[in-house]
Length: 92
View 1 (spheres, rainbow, N blue to C red):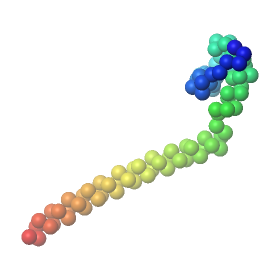
View 2 (view 1 turned 30 degrees about the horizontal axis):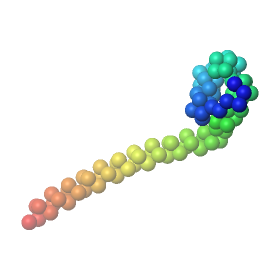
View 3 (view 1 turned 45 degrees about the vertical axis):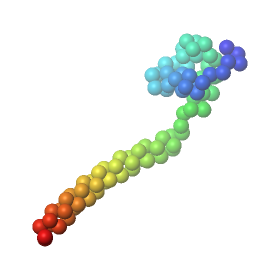
């Protein structure tokens, strides 16, 4: 398939077959009708370096922590609103 243009989705799926599912590059290339060089090129294009992966994981952890904190603070605010409304009625 010389000169064929492949979508990024097709390329990512090909790389995923090698990286995630453990298929040999040669086998994936033969099945998809592309060269092994193309698969290796796509791997370099789409795989993230270990440092980037660590940063993304750290950011995901931080986001989870912040969401938990936001939920806790929102619940505390709601409780205080209810208490304020209750005591406002009692003081009348």
